[in-house]
Length: 594
Image (cartoon, rainbow, N blue to C red; front, side, top):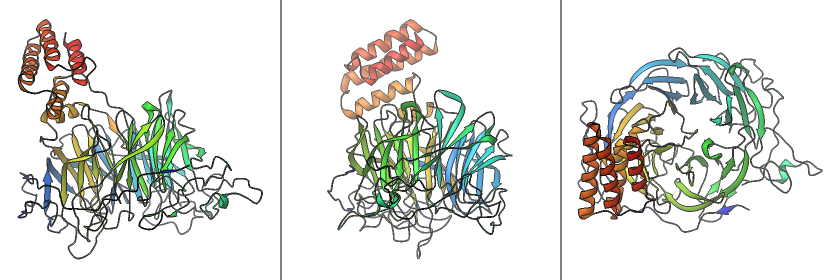
């Protein structure tokens, strides 16, 4: 039985205290709009424009804004490998060198149309989603005339990027509904293969001969509509997630190895077992039917994935990646379209997003509820999803700005659950959901609308943290890099500790578990958190910081014994329990340096 979140409603109110807009010391940036009303959010009333729009920022600084290059059209998702960011686009992808985050440079482009162009990386492989015209096997820009054309392609492309500036397509796996998005999934017990979960949301191309086994479509979204006259399930080309197996030694042999029926009704076996679509009642949303997942975020280290599946949020067992199994599902009367998902690092929470309006609607106006087009935060309790709260970017946006919850990722601050998230023309918002019942915004960046007179779709598609910085793909403008700034909500030590966690590649939908190596920045992060929480203050706080500072000075001189003494004294003076994060961090650092 589906469980719904609570029915309480909260309408938008302008209660956010004004924060000083961050001055950008870059000549190319326009000045932040002045705000006379001290009760107004500085994001409200920004001047419109494509590359000269007004800007507002708090606790984050825009470092660089790279304009999108011709012939590229709509920017989409991002993936990262080494010193490169790969920016997906409906017309292919662009490769940025981000070795200097303050000044990224466009290093390469690859034209390969087929919307929507979401990208992921794994080793020397790049995967790309294709769901629409002019998707062709040969990456040509001229649409194939019919689905019967051998060049007609919908599915997942696989590229060899061992020479990253010269990608080579090694295969293209055809699917019946194409690939709107996809998720790369590692098997911790199988180093020879990687799996790709395909989220296809387009119509079934039933006349295509290009898909092995063919494609079939049976109309209807109810349990009964997907049963034959004898009550047997009809296994068509909807209500499933394709699983592609990619042999790493021979990626050209990639193929679909499973049609995972994650929405099956347990009693009848009908593949259409979840939300059938429609209204939740007067004053509530009308929610899309669950016949596919829009996005699946995999977390292999804990054996779970979270699927944002149009009409439902689902929890998936991926301990056997080739055979994912649904273990729980929820629905919400305020969600129009379950869009994406993000776990916290402990794997005890999931943030689901609602793409109310499909991404092209203005859904952050003064009259729009704060719990529609928002995030829903769930705790995972004994394998079940339990609703805790909503979070929505809190600033009022205009009717010419498409604005709704979209793609984001965790920021690896020790001991906290913090996420940076795109809101299309609502900009980006950084929020803390450590207390899952009380999420709090701690930073933001926003531009004015593309147009002051009409709604021109734009804004951030994705904003992700990667190796110390935030990067964003702006639909119409280009590629941005940003840096968090210390504030009362996030200290310089916490930012430094987050930056110490470095990975060789990153796909937001293939979530890694981050583990911080012992360091002084990590220890000081926990000290700052204890001060912020009021559990460490006065002389004890001064003593702890003094011992940590002295330990770092002695460590530089190689005086190991004294280093350990000072770190031990810091733990004692803190008054914290032996199993507290601060004492554990001090002990880990002492073990490393002693």
